Amino acid sequence: MITLHVNGKDYAVNVADGMPLLWVLRDVLDMTGTKFGCGIAQCGACTVHIDGEPTRSCVMPVDMIGAGKITTIEGIGGTPVGAKVQKSWLDHEVIQCGYCQSGQIMSAAALLNANPRPTDTDIDTAMSGNICRCGTYVRIRAAIKSAAEGG
Image 1 (cartoon, one colour):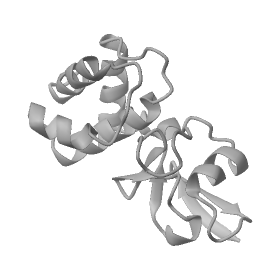
Image 2 (tube, helix red, strand yellow; image 1 turned 90 degrees about the vertical axis):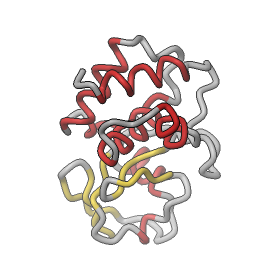
Image 3 (tube, one colour; image 1 turned 60 degrees about the vertical axis):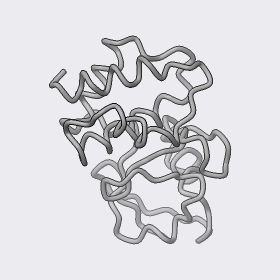
């Protein structure tokens, strides 16, 4: 039995030690907002926060998390920065297909938590591990800038 702290709640899960966090979230806890993209931590679709740090859940063994506090896309809107990012995403109509957007939002929220006034270079660096096949990168950058400015 492993206890996970997800979005402010504790969950006891009976899973194999090496099971990736992504599959625990999606298949055991039924939190399907975090997406499977590549399975090798290269696309960013599976990004969650562990203790505020963006983490690729597809390669994070659940037994390595310990007492870390996990935030998923289902919980990020409950944080001040996450709420600003989600609002800005809608205001700038970032989403096309939407598949990568939960990971994009999680990475953007982590960036703004660490750096409330990022430059274009800061944004490009922080978001470089998140792939959007629809190519909404210009709108993503605009939405991050808008969220940084307060809305």
